[in-house]
Amino acid sequence: MFVDETGLTSGDDRFFPFFATVAVIVRDEDLPVVEGKIRQWQTRWFGSPRYIHELDIRRRTGPFHFNGDRTKQARAHAEYVELLRDLPYRAVAVVVYKDELKRLHPDGRIDGYLPASLYPLTVHMLFERVVHALYADGDRIGFVEAEGIGEKEDAVLLQAYAGLRLRGTRYVGDRWFRYQLADALQFYGKVHNRPGLQLADWVVRYYAEAAARLKGQPISGQQGGVQAWNAVKDHLCDGGQGRPDKFGLKVYPTVPLEQRRILWPALPLTHEVVWDPEKLRGRVLPDP
Image (cartoon, rainbow, N blue to C red):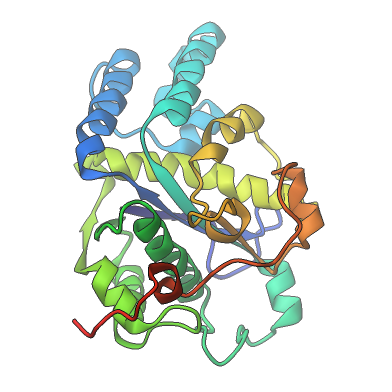
């Protein structure tokens, strides 16, 4: 699993008032395909398998500027969207609308279970869904890679991850986190050019933009955003219950069920899902 985020955890950002975290999940047997096709695209358009930031793709800047060659930009972008659609991966994303969160919970405290700080909050919501994705995909074990941002930020992620394995959450017990997640995270920088982290960097923005649509808060500069959303939406996990709105894309504060049909027109209008993996499994997991 490859974890990345977008947005600011503090301060006001009127152009992007969201914070999003994503986990891209790739089966071990599919990882060579993901790595090979991403590096092939990088080499084809940039001469080497170099890291290409989503921001440059969106703004047509940096290496994606191609000296202003719009035809080349369009061709590279079309192949990029094709990659997002065809690569074998699943995704879980959590998007928080910061302005609304602040209005509802000025101190950041949603309840007695969730952290008050924004980044750990999204990590808790994210990995609650990740363990469901792992269970639904053959009861697999997850090994986590994350982009190293800085000592403080990395420590916050490590602490939140350890807290899940130690205490669990309101909906998922600590035993399930210890059972389905590896002991520790691995951090890598952009210089390492990890294809899985490259993919996570690419998709997280499009899930944030989809949440913005649900909140009626369009984001400026969404070049190619609709095509990219159509490419990534079917990769969202559904918890094995046909509910990508519950287990794939978590938006907070919550959006009414009928409003979620903006993204999923065929979504059933019911709240009924099974959160407890022990009920899904039909037995109680023994202590490891």
